Image (spheres, rainbow over the protein chains, first blue to last red):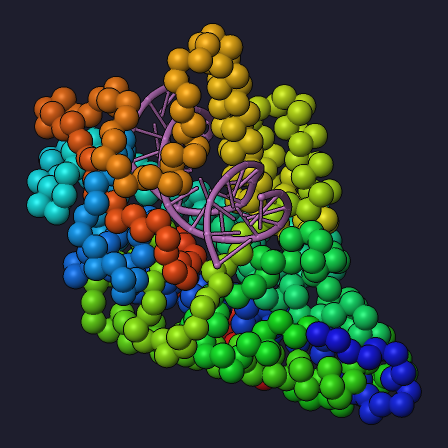
Length: 221
Length: 221
DNA sequence: ATCCTATGAATGAACG
DNA sequence: CGTTCATTCATAGGAT
């Protein structure tokens, strides 16, 4: 976006205090976080299931051109089918933390109806699921509790949504360097085209979620 | 947002033009709309079906709910800035193979001074760096030992003919003894030339989507 | 546009 | 269990 920051004297200007600025900043940050989380969630939820023929990574599930039967590709490791995953997640979600040996066996049998699978696969899956879930949680907590060397400028906004492993987000982008004011809001000091760092600020497929009508808005600053 | 500007004389103030203000307002408005839509969407979806909370990457497909029918750009991934890369390489070069946990956090903070980054990014970077470093080493050694046995370029093959039914390397990986699972030559729906394939999803703990910390901000404007 | 390569990210499996 | 490894997927950026 271009903005003639020079010559405020000629324009009608608004003034806001630091306090207001802070509120604004938080608001935007909160929105960014919310959007990000919801988006992730939405993606996760729209991605199933039975009626889908394609499900692997790399498959385009609704490519109209490819109703696609299964093609066979050599694969060395087990990959849960969507159905299996669904069941696994469901069981995991029940909170019964440690699937016993018996349980594993039972689950395996259940899952085998939906694709090749072994007890080891199930076992590993739960191990990984738990471990990764925990790691994320820990990371989140650490970020919330510790302050450490918080750079006052850039991390101010980021702090609010540094959850999980997402590295969002839109908020960091909101202000433009040459606006002639409000510079304390910058989150990124990089040249937009050269570093590539800026790219990550995009809303993930936001135009997909939203209509085009927002295109002009979300990166304006 | 109120712009009383009270006490400008005593406080540090920021100034923004009407134009900037308008853009800001639109930005926030867009956020609000987005959040709202996503929220509704989410509620609608959780209303019925499963509690599937995690999905595999690769299945972000055209969502029937979304009217927007244009090409979408997936979320972009983090890219280290030159400075960050330099620092990372330096740390990696020190040979301390395992920067894990606390170290990661520290590094992340350090790097955040040079651009947006998250702990996961750092973690991934080291994982990849190690793995690829190792792979190259191995590859080099192999190339030295074996003369030209096979003029095969693995990387080239991967991209172009993944459809072949080749199952290479009769996986020495042992599966569960009792179930005797030799397994999973899974079908993979591979469409070499796909259209607007996009982003991947990741699932994080969807259980606790909105933290309390955002509630206070959500409706400020 | 198309293809290629480098690399960030996801994840099953293995290790201590 | 918590960490780490190995393999694979997907994408950004460059070359053709």
